[in-house]
Length: 332
Image (tube, rainbow, N blue to C red):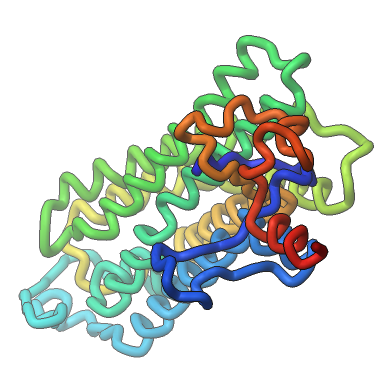
């Protein structure tokens, strides 16, 4: 079965969900009406599911880390104290004074609290595939709708969207797994630098291409999506270089507590919020995208995929969707 994404309502887009057990009469799910049929095929449904799981794990990681986080005093920092990280323990001491106006760093919380780190891994690793798929979908949508207006530069920028999305998602997954105190500090720093650079380039490229082809004729939701991207990219691109420079210098020393100066902690909060808002705006962009399934067309039996071939009495009528055949049988 060949599957493509489309925003159209072509009649041959109807299909049913079926399992591999032909003996089970209840194994086939038939949509009750056209509205339900379209809803079942929306790409946004799995995207929303993965988004809820990812955001839930991220917020849960912050909450559990805050409840288990230990704040040492100045004497403990100088003399050293034992930090528990799951089943392992390590002694930590630092000559860096505790920041007077400090606030907890989210990344440091995940670094020092094992439950928070595990939930952070779930939050960033689970949606990697769906993020790349959504980037490919938006890329294809742009190239389809504005094919006559696409220049060579626009084509290169659009084609780079899924590549940079994959790189930044991969790097974020790796630095969530490879910790500073337990694994390889240099690798952790490298992953974070690559993530920072690829995410900045990805956000700038995506926003530039989508803004270049935005128009006043777009719907209210498209306008909201574009505004979210523009505000997010400005905030992220401005603060990220400043924050990552301080963060890289701070993790060259032992991380004995999760706090950092108030300015950089607030900067981190704003960066995370801007990053989340930017990528959540893609849910608006794909809200009308749906799957079109051509039964058995992958084997060539029903090729070419031409609407005229699927009409009643036509050569490839048997390739029509299951629920259409069921309605035809019931009408006889």
